[in-house]
Image 1 (tube, rainbow, N blue to C red):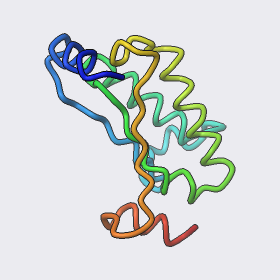
Image 2 (tube, one colour):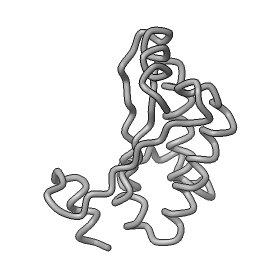
Image 3 (cartoon, helix red, strand yellow):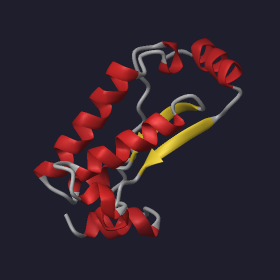
Image 4 (cartoon, one colour):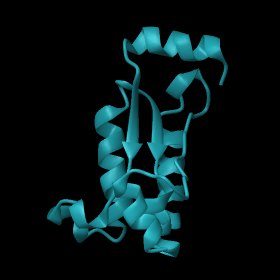
Length: 116
């Protein structure tokens, strides 16, 4: 990503929106819990609903790490889904910012890091 492509995308979408994917399994709607990968199903729904307005996605790794291997698989599936279905994100293959703080995180992420 370079600064020019970021500015062009902001102008094109008329947005500065960066969507955080802090996916808490306890807050996923019940109808998605029956899915074989409810974390990915929830992320996919969020991405599909926001892609036209969003310039980047920011998964918080604490939420995925706290779920162990299943969480990492959901994270990988989410990133791959965005790459495959929204390749025009930021006029580059895909822009993904990851939050992976280990201390001084806001309370939501800190709870999940404490469970790792």
